[in-house]
Image 1 (cartoon, rainbow, N blue to C red):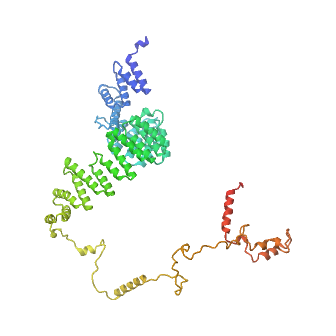
Image 2: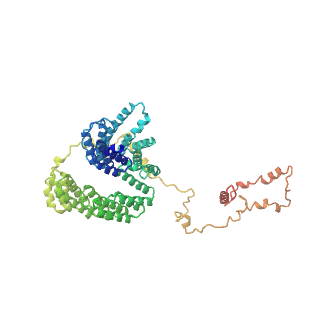
Image 3: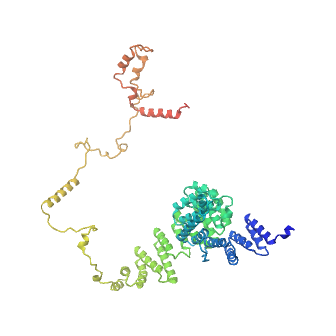
Amino acid sequence: EVLSCIHVDSITFEKAYCEYRLNRIENALKTIQSASQQTDKLKELHGQVLYRLERYDDCLAVYRDLIRNSQDDYEEERKTNLSAVVAAQSTWEKVEPEDLGLQEATYELCYNAACALIGQGRLNEAMENLQKAEDLCRQSLSEDSDVTEEDIEAELAIIHGQMAYIMQLQGRTEDALQLYNQIIKLKPTDVGLIAVIANNIITINKDQNVFDSKKKVKLTNADGVEHKLSKKQLQAIEFNKALLAMYTNQADQCRKLSASLQSQNPEHLLPVLIQAAQLCREKQHAKAIELLQDFAEQSPADSAQIKLTMAQLKIAQGSVTKACIILRSIEELKHKPGMVSALVTMYSHEEDIDSAIEVFTQAIQWYQEYQPKSPVHLLLIREAANFKLKYGRKKEAISDLEELWKQNPKDIHTLAQLISAYSLVDPEKAKVLSKHLPSSDTMSLKVDVDALENSPGATYVRKKGGKLTGENQQKEQGQGDVKKKKRKKKGKLPKNYDPKVTPDPERWLPMRERSYYRGRKKGKKKDQIGKGTQGATTAGASELDASKTASSPPTSPRLGSSTAMSSATTSNMIPPRHQKPAGAAATKKKQQQKKKKGGKGGW
């Protein structure tokens, strides 16, 4: 009887809610759609399910209907959810958010408004909204006496994380990194927030501080992260894992991750670029170019970016001409000023002036057809004319100069260039054009030459003529004599120089290269070097040998004899440790090496 009294729609809501909490989002959607009547509770849950499925347009319609047709105490929460949908559209789908007229009275609404502004690239305004959200959050939480400062900091973590992200986008990486690390030290319970912050730190580190990046990448693998983040966020984390594997020289891991990403996102270019970069690190440039070529054929939409990468690889290999051919095959870019500049520079490096002029001609023809007399068109004509004149192609530059002069007849510089070009081809035409030049009177500049030469910035001052008198003349003569004496200073001669003896003509050659060099005479000091203890010599060996003396001293010491004997035998002799016979130093080094090899243990 109890079961029969329970409303069917209530059971449907409970089932759908359980499926939602168990992250069975598709099943929850089917359960909601199967309900006979859509109550406000089911509509609320329907909006949450659609948001998790990233169906933002449908979600926006559900929340608009709820706000329009419901009157209860949950209007503020519904407006917050509605602003979150608008922020997601701006961030992930790059949709221009519409003004819903939501008053930013709570910190949640301010935060969502800041996220929408970040999606539009309005970073300064977004930062102001985040600061306002921080103030509102502190104000609202401080009113509750049970909330501690730690609780407030934990609640502010997501706002501070978004502030750090804006700093990173603005190039303030040091400030962003400091704020990211402060948030991680708080150990927030939101695994999605931790994963995003860890990923952003990895992007700041790039190929530096890879050990820190390895620690941070573990935070992106926490349980439940896949249910907290959007598909694009999870995709970005996986891409960064593959790049980190490449930077840490884990080639197999990098190939495995990039291949998996390519199978999951066959239309995405980044996995292919990662694979090509890994092949280049392994010095396999040909395979990298082949891989990019195959992908370009499969995905024509990305062909321009792929061809730019291929051209870069060709330049790295030193094949500049082949790189130019690849760049000129990009139809949508070959007329752009940046592309023209790059191609002309590369052809000039290869000394292929004709191909460079051809690049200019094709680009000018495109602008002549689609954007005639535009600023870019005239700029290309000007640069083409200057380039031709630089390389002596004056005849070819005439048409460009005439076009420029027609556009601006008062341009004297262009007219002068045109006359110079015609002077080699058609002197009569040059004379006719020279009549358009202004007269010399109008071109003369009213400049005081003397004042200009005497100014502090003048590099040369003309000296006025005049006779030197008295002391000035003597000083100048004295200075001249000193300078002359310094110039006539003789070179130094060697101390043993004898002017009567003819100098050795081979004195500038090393001793070994002289004709009279016979090499060193070996064996002279052979008898002087002893093979016994360090410093011993053959000359003193007989004196020290007790067996060769007529009366050898007793082996045991006697009173009064030791001092007399030592004084008699050693008074005129240098102690052996002070002698420095040839080869003694080398023997000492060998003994030291043996001691080092033996060590303290004697092994």
